[in-house]
Image 1: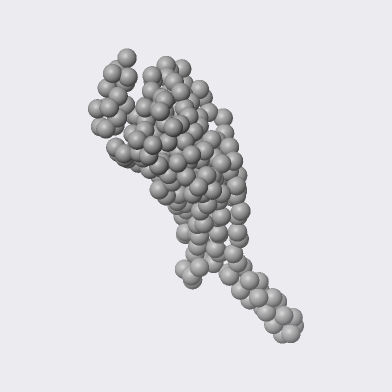
Image 2: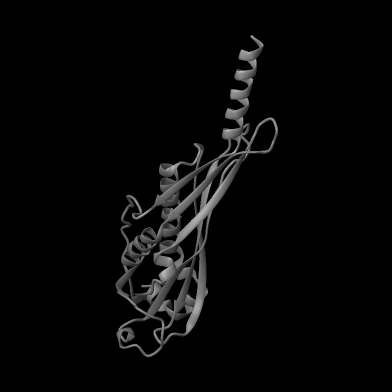
Length: 218
């Protein structure tokens, strides 16, 4: 009986050790922005060039979330989220710009004097400022999982002069623990919020209002 008890205790200790040190990695690729409503607005009479940098189109993020053991308060489980969302970034701003402006032209560089910029009023360069998971680390707390995205959008004159920058934050939140499906859905939720802010507040940006006052007030 003592021997059986020792074996059971050893198995329990081994199992606890394995699970207490476990790491689960999620490899997630987001290529689409989901189903978005198409706002019924008149496009602004502004011809926009859009520049997508290499980092923007190939954006990747690695986030580590460590779960605590309810008794010992030490790290019991580690979740690693490797998220690729470069294609979704481009899809998001293709969607935003096509709705808001009468003409959108891809721009291959921000260098001055390029011929393809002659029929452009403004160049837009979106970048990812941050992509963050916020998850409860205490298993005894039933908390909310959050994904926050901050895009920094740079504005340039066709000649290449930077005239301003605008940071837009979008968030998605849910109660279930973050798995692959939840990360995709919360990221798309955050992107919807960014799209709504950009479309609503573009003309309220100080530098834009000065430069395109007539177009924004038609």
